[in-house]
Image (cartoon, rainbow, N blue to C red; front, side):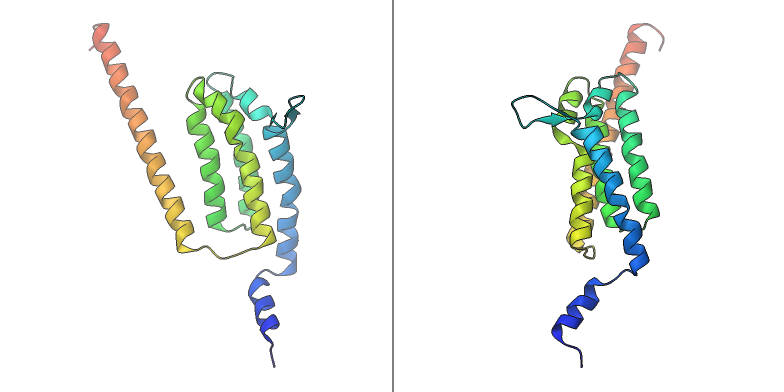
Length: 175
C-alpha cells in the first residue's frame, strides 16, 4: 500500500536519472555566464558588482547584440537539455528586455548595470532545479502578456523610426 509520502515523491520524480544528470551539468554553465557577464567586477567598499554585459553594451551598434548572443547560446544549451518551455520563455524574455532597453543610448547602458539578465536566468534555473513544477496558467499569462507588450514597444519603435527617416528624407528633398 502506498503512503502519502510515496505519492508526493512520485509526483516530483518526473525525470529519469540520466535526464536529471544532463540538467545538473547546466548549472556550472549558467553560473559561469552569470558571473562573467553580470558580476565579474566588484566596486571597492560596496556590494555593487557588474560584469562584461554592460561594458560590451557600450560598444555602439554591436555591443548589446553580442551580449544577447552569449546569453542565447546558454539558452540553446538549456533547450537541448530539455528544460521546460515556460522556463525557457521566461529566460528569453529577460534576454529580450535587456537587449531592447540596451539599444537606447545612455539609458540602456545604465539599465544593463542594474538588470543583469544572466544572473536572473541563473536564479530562475536554480529555482526550477530545486523545486521543479509544472507550468501554471499564471506562468503562461505572464509570458503572453510580456510578449504582447514587447511586440507593441518594438512595433512602435519601428514606426517612429520610419516617421523620422521619412521626415529626414522630406527635409533633404529626397521624397
